[in-house]
Structure formats: structure tokens, C-alpha cells
Length: 91
Length: 143
Image: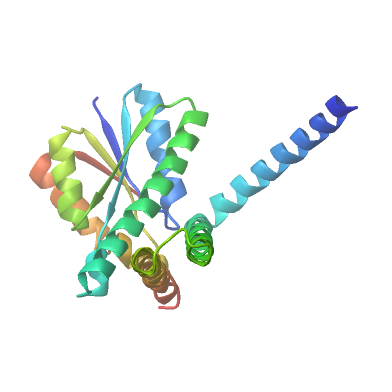
């Protein structure tokens, strides 16, 4: 039974990978957008984890401020990068 | 025929450019390198920490795009190295070609509306012509 399900999932996976490849072939800029989006989500998760660590007393206020400022700068940097893509696409 | 360098930055022309370089490397049976140069100067002056974060995030994005290109090349049976540099795009590309004694540069001609400034703008055709004259490297511009 598991073998049958696994094969089914593998076929779906192959199908999606092929479709994604076609999509990126036609719209290469999407790849870059998706990477930026993934990075932004990772940084937001990191920021949230820092907040949890502060509340649980695992980080001092000073260390929290230092780390969260770095994450915020990185998020701002992603905004600047994203901005250039948007600006250039509406030229 | 020697080393092929493919300059790429993930824009609209990137897939065609990478594909051309991979096919060429396969046909010639030579080594290839995907090169990405990011230029954080597009935003103007920033405070030191933000400037460092921008440079770091641009490099990270560049490395990710290079890893994807490398994986695609591997699927075609081509082993490619990746290099991500930061600074002036044209100067870095030219310097790197000299450094590795490349014989061919494959570079994309982005549609103007989709040029990503952070990955360097400028006239690709002019650059290609100058590079041919000054270095003798074969430059293939993919449209």
C-alpha cells in the first residue's frame, strides 16, 4: 500500500517539478522573486524566534536588541533589492 | 578551447544565457563557471550596518541563483563551478576573466524593462565589444 502511495506522490512531484521548470523558463524573474520571498519569510521567523527567546529569559535585552537590529537591517535590505526589481519592471 | 564563464544575474535572459553556456561547455567538453557580480552601490550612501546587510543579502541571493544554475547544468551532465563577487559589475567580470584565463564569456542581454540595477546595469553590447578588443576573449551575447 505504501509503495503504491509513494509512487503516486513521486509522479506528482515529477509533474510539479516539470511544470515549475517550464514556468521559470518562461518567467525567469519569478525565480528571483521566490528566493527573495523565501529569505524574507526566514528572517521574519528568525525575528519571531528572537522575541520568544527574550520572553523566555534566554536572551538579555542588550543581546536581543543587537540581534533584532541586524535582522531588521536585513529585511530593509531585501526591501531595497525588491524595490529595484519593481522599479525596473515599471520603467 | 578553454574555460567558459557564464555571467548571470537571474533576470529574464538568465535561462537562455545559462542554457547556451551549458550547451557550449558540453559541445566543447570544457570546464565552466557561473559568475554573478552584485553591486550594492545602486542605492547610494547608507549607514554602515545597512550597507553591510545589503551587500550580504545581495551575495546570498546571488549564491542561491548560482546554485540553481549549477543544479540545472548538472542535470545536463555538465559540472560547473560558481563564483559570486561584489562591486562594479563590468570591472569585476573583466578582472575575473583575466584571473582565470577564460577563453569565452557568455552573457545575457536583458530586456531593458527587466534590468535589475542591483545586479548591474549598463550597455552589455558596448561592454562585450570592449572586452573582445582588450582581452581577446570570445564574448557571446545571448538575446
